[in-house]
Every structure is written in structure tokens, then in C-alpha cells.
Image (cartoon, rainbow, N blue to C red; front, side, top):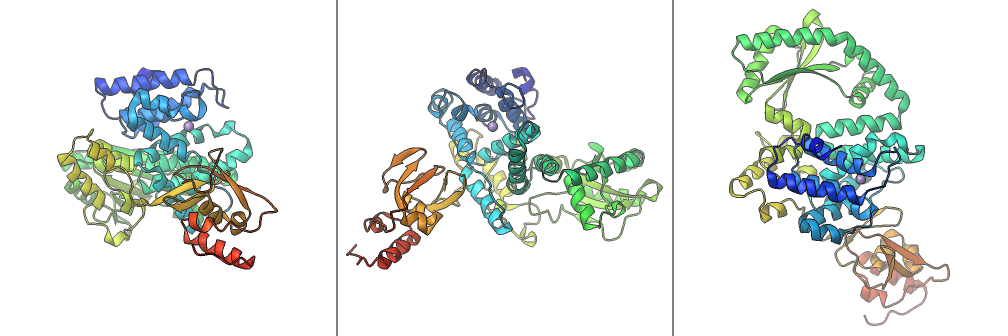
Length: 496
Ligand code: MN
């Protein structure tokens, strides 16, 4: 992709200064990755630029997309994070560093839903800045699009990680567009047979319904026009393969029971128009009782808003109609990123932690969306406070370190390798003789920082922890285990 082609992907218009930043990141990353190839045979840089393009399409601007262009530079080229800091400044460097840290995250083994939920939260909290999560999602989306080039074991692990961690996070952030594609791509690798089955049924169904859909679109367009409702857009949409499969399963694989295989989407200027349009739709086509869902007055927990209704469409066949405003449409596709389009981001942690039950969601919109608007009033977009508002402080006193295999260990601030060892396993702690952090030997009283990889060196012969460790360890977990083992070894614990 050329620079000019990348520019064409931006949803927001770019000014000269923004264009320049993008151009500089583009040239820098292109030169840094020169000569490198991906498994697909493409130039490595294509991955960086595709990642940036995905973000541009969901409404992200120059800073985030510049970081996306640079995201693999420190890990995969001779240039370091410091080089990026010098050339592009602190903010861009912090974004790139955040992506590098998140890159160490790996999902291994079968996890229960509770553990998965924790991993999702940790993933979000580790990122510290919401833009890092968005870049990571775009990075993963492009990696999923090119997953065919990897060996099967890797495909399986990456697809599972995508289904269990990345797609739910995209959903939590309301980015339906990315969520849907991630799910469909992961589904294809995780369950190829059912994927083929669902895709086949869906294509067949869509082909059969295509004509009905076109008739309905024309009839509704006509009807709305007659009633003086301005139609900004009206189109048909097919259901995503994975979502279709889940519904099929729920209905014993009976396609006739899935009412929303195809739907007509109507975009009208404002909320009163939505309700008026609903009345007009119901006058034209008889509604199915109990199938009217008003997600405008009661949005879904992820912020989704629209009115859905199922009607007896042309030839009396079931047809789902979705009615929304342009803003709701963007929010449904781009989620939290849409707020860069409409007002700019703000607090979102209540939202991703699902501290709302659906009943508690404020009537009009999520609280953070409101706060976001208020922020927008007195802040410019390049304001420092604005940037800081993007940071997550929920896990403020936590750090997340990794085992060499990519498992996450959640520790308090100032934790040491001793705390890490006992958090992994009591025996690892008891047999510890040393520690490496990011590949370098460190003393046992050194502090672990967020995102570091900690390797505990053990010996079969070591069985008893050193008494001094009681003084060094920060967590009560490590301290109590050290005491226990000392007692077991018959060592009297001195006054510490
Ligand atoms: Mn990447």
C-alpha cells in the first residue's frame, strides 16, 4: 500500500500536520522493515500499513495510526524504542511500548469462563491506554486475515486466543465491525466443518432472500418518502457466519427459526425519526408480536443502540428491520472508536468492567459517553489532560509480569522476583536460586515493572528459602509461604 492509498482509508479528514506525522512514520517504518518478509511472502511493512489502515477506517487519527505503523519496529528491527522516542516523541513511543508489552500476552491451556474474564480485564488494564488496545485489535485482525500462512498448531492457538480474548474485548468496546470479522476468521480455523456448513447455509439463504430484500428496500424507501422521513441510508445486511451458527445451534439447526438471517437497515437523521419510521414500517408490514426490541431507550451493555423489529415482509416472509441514526450506526460498527469521530474518548473502565447491569444503564446513553461530551466542551483534542484521561487507573497499584511462557502474574507495585516465584508456585519459590528479568540476571530484591518477563532459576538441591527473603518480599502470600517452609525445616525465625 502506498502512502496516498493509506490516506484514502481515513474516516476523518486529515490536516497538513497530521499528514506529515503519518508520512514520517510511514517512511521510518518502511525503511526499518526493509528486506523483511512475512510468512505470506509479502513485505513485512505491508502488515504495519494494513494495521494502520484498519484503524483509520474506524475513525482513529494520526497519532494512533502513526504508532500502528511503528508497532513492530522495536521488536523486529534494529531500531529501538528510544529511536522512536527521539524521532516521534514520548506519546508515540509510549503507545508503541504498550503494544510491545501486550504482544507478550499468550493464552495457553483451557481456561474457565471466570479465568477468561480475568484475562480480558488484565489485558485491558495492562494496556494502560485505550488506544493501545485498539492498535492491538487491528494488529490481530490483520494477523487473522493472513493466518493461512502459519503452521496448523500456531493457527489453532492464535484463533483460540482471538475467539476467547480479542473478539470479546472488541465487543466490550462496541466495535462490532472488528468483533464480527475476528469471530468469523477464528471460527473458520477452530471448527472448519461447522464453518463450512454455516457459510453454505447462509449463502444459500441470502441468495434466496436477495430478491425479497430488494423489494422490501424499495417499498420501504417509497413509504418513508411519502411520510416525509428523510432516509440517509437503507441497505440489506447478511448475518455474520459465527453469529448465525450460534443461533442455528440454539434452534436445533433449523434455518427457518432464525429470523434475522437477512435484515434491512434504515438510517434516519434523529431519534424521533427512528420511532416514526418504526410506525411506518409496521403500517406497511405486519409486525411479529414480541419481536420489537427498543435498544434506543434500553441500550445493550456494550452501548449498542437501534430499534429492531421482525415483520412479515414481501410474500409474507419474516424480515428483520433495524432502525438507527447515523451516529448509532457508527457506534455500532466502531464502538469506542466512534467517540474519536463524535467527541473524543474519556472514562470507559466502568463500561469494560461491566459494572452496569442492563437495568442500570442510564436511559439515554452510557455514563461514560456523557462524561466524554462534557470533557469535549472544555478540552482541545491535543490537550495533555485529554491524553491522560485515556489512561486506566483502575489497576493503578498492580503490575502484570509474564512467565517465559507468556502466563500473566498479577502482583502489587514494588513486587520482587521472590513474590513472583511464590505467585507462580510454592515449590518454585522454595527452590529459587536466582532470577532473570527480560533475559538479564537481577538481584532478588529488584523491583519488577509492568510487562516484564520474569524467569525464576531453581535448583533441585535448594529446599529452604533464605530468612532474608521475609524482609524483601512484598506480598503476604510469599511471606507466609516462606515462614511455613522455614518452620518445616526447623529453622527458628529471627526477629525481623
Ligand atoms: Mn504486528
